[in-house]
Image (cartoon, rainbow, N blue to C red; front, side):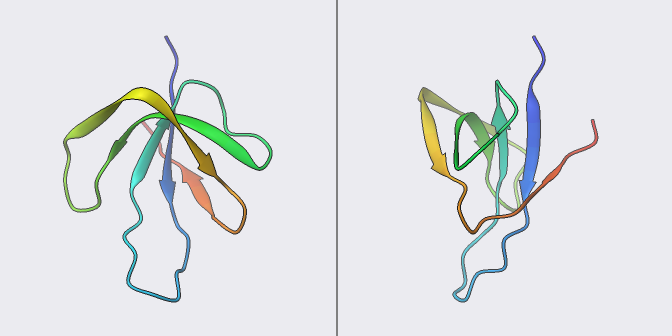
Length: 66
């Protein structure tokens, strides 16, 4: 199964960490469902029990090279 892995690159006005998000389908439009993520500063993948809907408005992401 192919996954789409994106590093969040949003520049926040507060001290908010940018994590790596893993999507089953390529994020398109205003929202996307993440199936897992990697917390900033770690390498451990945290899977969601139910896909988490992310609001993409105002957020930026870069595709992670695998």
